[in-house]
Length: 250
Image (tube, rainbow, N blue to C red; front, top):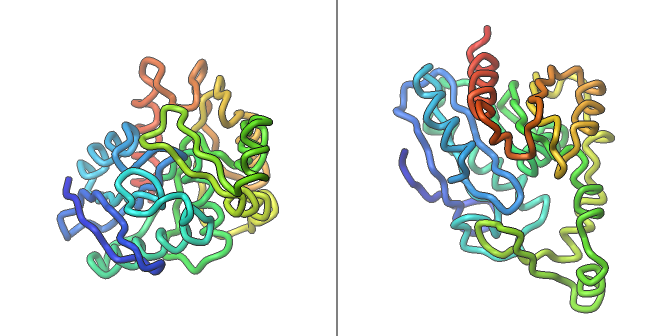
């Protein structure tokens, strides 16, 4: 895998990690979860597995995540969508003949669905791992009274719950979440969607995934006993097997 930095629409650099040779017929863009990065275990597993099937991968860090040079002031929904669009345009330029697709985890899946619903996009297939389809509700429920007071008093709060790096969360980001409901934004035909989710996910409840699958018609794989990371024995193998079948199906 190769590290690369591209200049995004927002004026800052986007750190990327790719596994492409240049002759792939498909390139899968990877979007990571909240507080994670392009180097997450799931992204690494997918980036190792898909090239064996002639499929390249391209991961990147959202604002304020991983190796991103910017802090939480730039963590806004529109900025995240712009970064995804910049990465997609870059991959299309490098691989003009390749089909574009998406593999997204948690918060990244939430962003990918917004992107598919609101932006021009090249990809027609999207695989969602532990999708945080109700991200506004998840974030609202996870915000403590003390954090809420800080948001009101100073306009931001810094949280660190085992994340790759502490995250500065602004009131503007919280407002962004409240105005981006994927259940309302979804429209039929925006992409072929398949999902995998842990039945014991306490971060993004499987009930929300079931509700979105029913709305969208997406195929939903449920992994018994698995939490938000699907790190139970054999869990990652289930994720990879489902993703490979999805991306290689014709």
